[in-house]
Length: 200
Image (cartoon, rainbow, N blue to C red; front, side, top):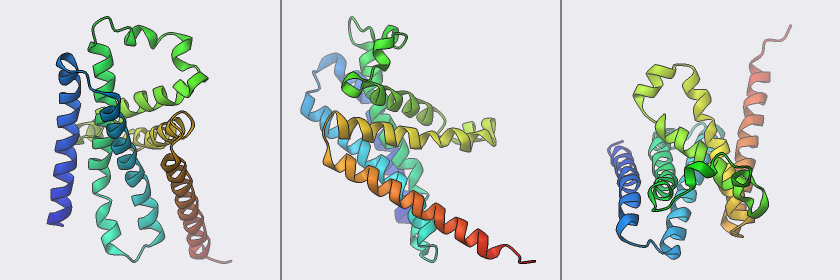
């Protein structure tokens, strides 16, 4: 468990470091397209790992080590969303930025160049990042879990954007794997519920 706690601390620390450093660095340096692309890949891989942990632990219910990995979902989510929100903040503070005003234009949500998916990912990532803490859990109570379900919108929006616009074969693979695992875990749960139901 100490190893998992350490990994969790590293993931959260790295996420917050990127969240604060990306906008600040952009004021002084041009973060090249290659560096941005690598960070987007890290963000998506973290989201992919986050999305497969729960269904895998449900499918392989006897594997205790998988249950322990559920703790890492928070760290993976913070790392992934911090990169996206860091780039959002970079866009907001850039000189001559029209990012905030563009939020209210129809073009921002256009399906041409699949921008809609990217922006759904931006907005859901921001909400998830802001609510990934104990204070939000206490404040939102039962609604907190409902808000955290935005992780599906976040993952699928990012995956569709990468698969369609960036033509990423990994994103397509990740979308298929997550969908398959989630559906399989859901069917298993239904079957267990049916078996546990008393017969009359």
